[in-house]
Image (cartoon, rainbow, N blue to C red):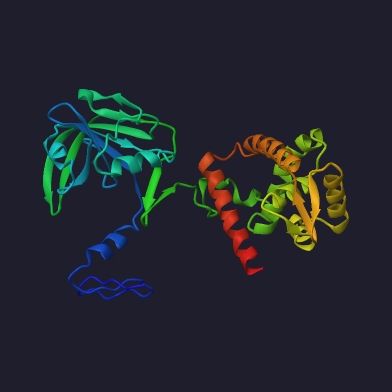
Amino acid sequence: MRRVRCPCVPVPRGAVDDVTAPIDSRALRHALGQFATGVTVVTCRAADGAPVGMTANSFASVSLDPPLVLWSVDRRARSFGPFAAAEAFAFTILAQDQVDISNRFARPGADKFADTPCEAGLDGVPLIADAAGHFECLREATFDGGDHLIIVGRVRRFARFDRPCLVFAQGRYGAIAAHPGPTSEHDGDVEARHPYDDFLVPLLFRAYNHLFAAFSGALAEQDATGGQMRMLAILSEGPCAEDTLLTRTMLSPTRFNEARQRLLSEGFIVPEGEGAAITEAGQTRLIALLHQAAAREDSATEALDATEVAQLKALLRKLVRHHEADG
């Protein structure tokens, strides 16, 4: 990677970019991307009354007394004229499940409001629904900001909703999660933590026991076992050799043979070459079990929000794929 350096300033040890003057705009943009921001959609009404909106992450608080906020609009933007002239405008702080809305308002052209649930705010300025917050403003001042115009607004009404907000950093969307350090207020009394809480394997094992306990009753009702379900899930990807299937199911040889024989006898799998393949009946059986698993998983992970569950799954998939690739 290139190293980028501002003129007359020594490069810090460990910096990944180093560019001398003139400043490389793209490299500067990437460096600024190290600063994480929230994501807003700024809205106003054009002179003809048409709603106008664009995605922006330049929103910032300026003052509490008086209540002032600011943002900057690119002079090259199609909506620059309406925003530069607008006396009233509003910010919608997007929630973390509103990535589609952020992308929609970041694209030029098209009717951005057509499929976007909105409500009319002060002076008819649109406010996007199901957001993390709203700030409705009157223009206080504008300042030259190079290729942008800096617009300061005086807040006249605002609302905060109990929804996690969307984050943007390093050119990607993100979500806020509690810091995992021992000083986190969400961690409770550090002394009361389980002695294995700082070790991944015991945590995974304990989490597995809790999650599977929530599902084991549903499996029993279906007259199935976790081993049978894992075997069906693996074979749904395609036929598999028996030794590979044994390894991937993580069963003992005895339990593996029990699960395999049960699935064969019920017609859910059939022998194929040196291994086995799933049948149509097996696919139907797997879908039913997965439906049960999803319902129990939702209940067992109720302490986490949807984004935290998705993040946990993504990290575990990354860890699994790394080791499976090495294998």
